[in-house]
Image (cartoon, rainbow, N blue to C red; front, side, top):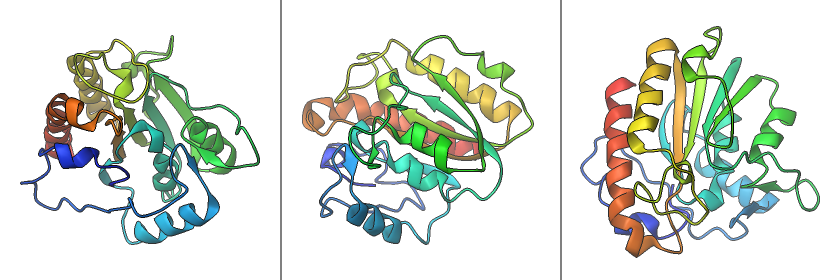
Length: 212
């Protein structure tokens, strides 16, 4: 999903089969916060698409798009979040959807979401110990990675790409995966960060394509 011009500086998806781009750059009211009119328009544009598969959703400023994909899941599931921020903050005003509060909103509004496992913000159970009773949806914000692996618009963690891929291998081995989304490209540093983000996106896309 294009929310900024970040993808204009990347090429990892150019030669991939079945890669569909949903351009949302013309929609106002989307940066960090999603107003009701913008939410309705984005929901229309993704209406025909399933939560199953791989979804690239641009900068972490738009991580709330994960919520719109989770709303499409019609069975009990758990969310596995790789993120340097928990994204579970109450809204600053009203009940507006935000990039910093979408996880809390998901917990409060999605009855099929039974558990959230977060990696990158502190202590969490090892990925191999996540209960196997429910399928998983995985959401990745590349700000969980070190600056050697990604360039984002937020402060970043210290996870390596290899560590992230190792965790994904365990999750795919032990669980049925409903879908995966990936954000954390840079809208502000799209050109300078394009090369490294392109390499990381390509590595993630190659792994996920082979395992879905």
